Length: 174
Image 1 (cartoon, rainbow, N blue to C red):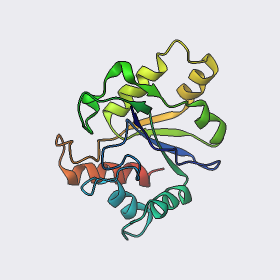
Image 2 (image 1 turned 90 degrees about the vertical axis):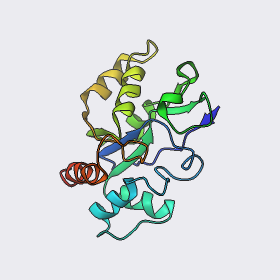
Image 3 (image 1 turned 135 degrees about the vertical axis):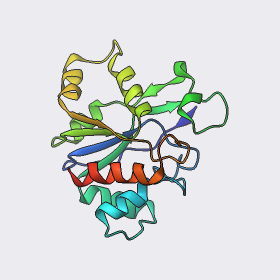
Image 4 (image 1 turned 45 degrees about the vertical axis):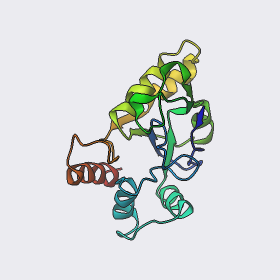
């Protein structure tokens, strides 16, 4: 069973960026840690005067300073093979993160940004769970939501420059 990363948010977080599950390069290290992933260059461009954010601590501090958080929909899962692809996750192995933690720790949360269509899809599956409390469901439904293109190099359905611009436009509009 592969384990995800801990959440990055605090009591003043207003926006949480939700992914699906960390890539192999990220597991146990830092969210979006693949060197060709556009996520951290976009964050640096928007919130750090374009200066690269190198360490996990520096990256996470930048996000929190701007009231942004990070987390994944899936807490742990198994893959069909050694992979970073969401399509290789074995559906019956999925253990979702407990979004009560988000509600309890982020009283100022206004919106969720999904870091890909897959993250949104997995989140919708989470919402369909019969064990989800109606209070939590209502709270999650009340949040603004947006879905942006994956910043992963594995997503080739959009040119990198267009992904970069769509993310930049969304983040600077918060």
